Image 1 (cartoon, rainbow over the protein chains, first blue to last red):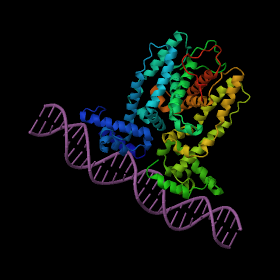
Image 2: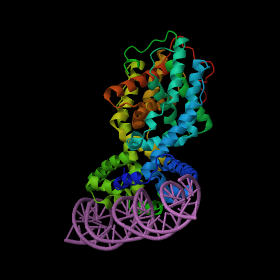
Image 3: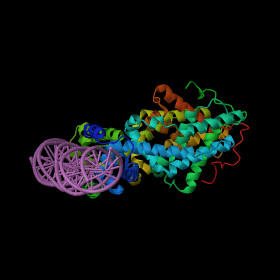
Length: 243
Length: 243
DNA sequence: ACAAATATTGACTATCTGGTCAATCCTTCA
DNA sequence: TGAAGGATTGACCAGATAGTCAATATTTGT
């Protein structure tokens, strides 16, 4: 990360940072105060722009507490990432589409996903920061790679039911679709400012957001739906290939 | 930007920074040396992670030259953004599809766009940094909002010809489509590390990249194509609505 | 050749920043 | 009750960082 931090960081982490659980009740409030201040700071300014002192100040705690509980700036960022992933996961679990018509359900899923990015913009911002740093925190994290994404199951279920009912075509890759749903909804929001600059119009009005999510849903639906008589492009390989 | 920089920056910019043109031939080499070092540094570490000294060192010039020519770190970043936008624009102009079948052309356009992000990853990274800073540099830039995106014309042309030939349906919004093409291709690449973490597999192998671009092209094509007899979802508003 | 303008440089600094130290407070439990 | 261990704090620091100053080198037009 930063040249100076590494050695001292590893040292500090081993020495202080307790094993994840905040056993003492007094600390749990402190920890969550630090966490929410840290989420905001890191999301607003990115890892490198974020200031440890600022986080401590906004959390209303002494800076050393932060080192006491999280070991280092890296440790805190990793904790923030895990926390936010978990928050998203919890929210995604809320989506219940089991009884819904596959077409209606898929549309709802796309729009629901898009709304998450609108309502919790921190998440995508943190991810960008993390990707800039080549994923060094996610890679080290033990919980994140294990977090099963409930949306994948939901998508799979919708696809299966859609195929059975004849509304969806076969052979669609769940991960491809998941990435595309995320891409179509998130990219617009995370690149809001540069898009606004080149298109010369405001993009985050409720109306425009709704329009974009509808567009995204349309695109996903046209992709999965079994357009009767629809003929695929002759040359292009279809995405069902080995994966 | 950073609390301390602003006042001094504005001052410095007014005093030093020459009006864009490097009149003196000796400086042009220096400027471009600084630029390419700056592009790399800013793309690698983001605005806040980038170090002015590092840029000067890699450019092989004295740090003051950088302030002489660009006024401040902000000024340099703005110049880097403009330079990179222009580089992308130049590349996009190379795409010539006028004589191509709309379907083939659209597929080629999507894949061509995706390849740009793969070959010039700096661009998307700079954009992310810029979006994190709420677009303050793009907004101030005079050239960027004026840079007409040649891809928009190309897309428009393809759509028009596709509609005329009966291969594409009517009423598709060019900007919506442009954003989606970018989203489907870029998001996968810029979020490479976090996706790799949660999916637990490498994503940037040539094979996987090709697969993703094919998938993106399929999705775009299915969206624009006139699936004969294809019936749109009953409730969802179509994107041709007032815009 | 010479003055004006620009290019280039080395030395310097005010301030910030992640991190540390050693001490004190507070809770728990034997 | 008392000691053990985590929670919390104020003071402090070494190195980094964007930016500045004043001087020198180089080119250009006349």
